[in-house]
Image 1 (cartoon, one colour):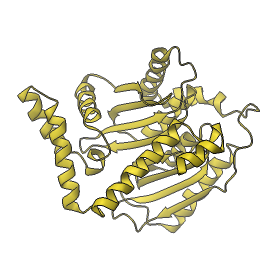
Image 2 (cartoon, helix red, strand yellow; image 1 turned 120 degrees about the vertical axis):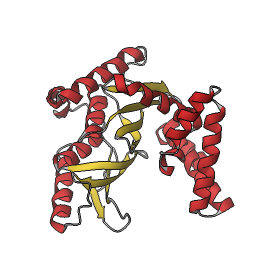
Image 3 (cartoon, helix red, strand yellow; image 1 turned 180 degrees about the vertical axis):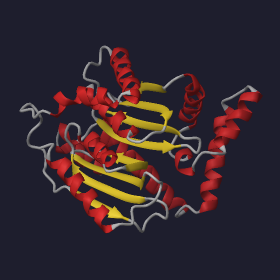
Image 4 (cartoon, one colour; image 1 turned 30 degrees about the vertical axis):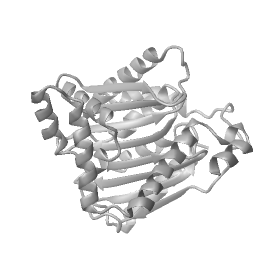
Length: 300
């Protein structure tokens, strides 16, 4: 019914991205209706089934042992959010890291969307660098999941909209990687690229539904992280502005769930201070909320 209603509304009300969101919602709701809420034992059981599917794709016994050892250190959140082929690809990327600053892969998924995966050593402001490098090359991020391994490796998986130049994807992704590698050693390099992107443009889309910007900060839902939720309307550079502001506040993003359903942005960040502690400070809450609302207002 939702699909029929959206498609009947008009061409702008339905696209590949919205279809993927609705499909994900359907699958997750169906699972809960059929099996009930997941318990710890269910999560372990599902994770083990994923492990079996991953290992079944590998014939070499020594390689299987390496993957099994690596797999046992992964979080349930990561395992249950990735398909077996992607998990194998991520293992391969992490094996390549010792000889490189970062490893990046990009592939076309559904319709005109692309999945970009970046593996590198974690560092303060890394996610802001990645979002900035993508924005600098005209790419709009629809969703993102970031994972930090116990070993200190950061793995970020992002979905972006259609490419600005779909005829030359390899050239575009090479530029993105070059920008990222240079930014890892010289953060000012990316800042210089983004100066022109921050200038107001009269060519930006008009008539998008306006919603009040909201920033919610929760200390109760997690024992280890302060949760920051940001709700605003989508416009160029919004994710980079949010993540860069968190970096400037001295906050480390440990987990993130980025979603852009239509013209609305709903971003959730699990953060700590630079010492790995929750914020637990009302004044810091207010400072964070004010800084985020200010950075969002500057995008208009």
